[in-house]
Length: 300
Image (tube, rainbow, N blue to C red; front, top):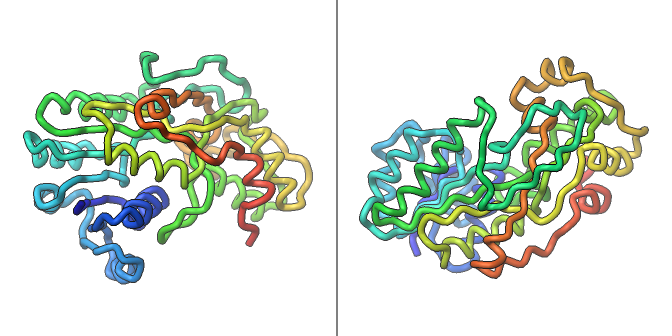
């Protein structure tokens, strides 16, 4: 199958691209710079120079491909519109990457939530996440327009990426802060909980969804959960540092920005990915974020 994939140089897209290539697919990957294009080429991914703002290019590639995987921005409505318009009536698969920050609350690290979502639980997002939820719903509804559109909603991803970019955005941010200051911190009390998934298990689900997910499917991608207090305690042990300390929210916002501090690191986001297991026989192999941090996370 000829697949056009956005985000080919990123953590998610790069890992997915190489997993699909290993199954014999030909991958054309969107990349912004000639330098990254050369590195992608060396991995056996055919580079396409451009970005999500070039909607004419996106439509051209989508029409020429047998399938499209959008692993770049989850929030770029114009890119999604271009793909849906180009693929309408074709019957081709369109896999779109979302994230469980759509369920984020405003806990700011100070409390755990007992609310756990599965694919049948209605979503009432905070205002900052409403646009992403609207895009996800648009893609699911597009299945009625003659394409096999699927949304994969990733929880916190850990592990080492296989492509050009090896790090995800949540745990590495806390590790970088700890290395810079010598103090491991969690936002607030660190009581907030996120579901999580290993990057290789995530990529396996993309491969399964490409092969046989039904049109209009929505999947939470998870295999376990941990509080940020637990995650940072594992970071401290791995790095040989003292016990984690609270990170006042205003300081975290100043260091990382509002969205990253409040929603990526300070919120609760608890899901159960029941549908992928039931519909696609997805069987993740990695089940412990804290175990990976303590035993496998690169120390450099």
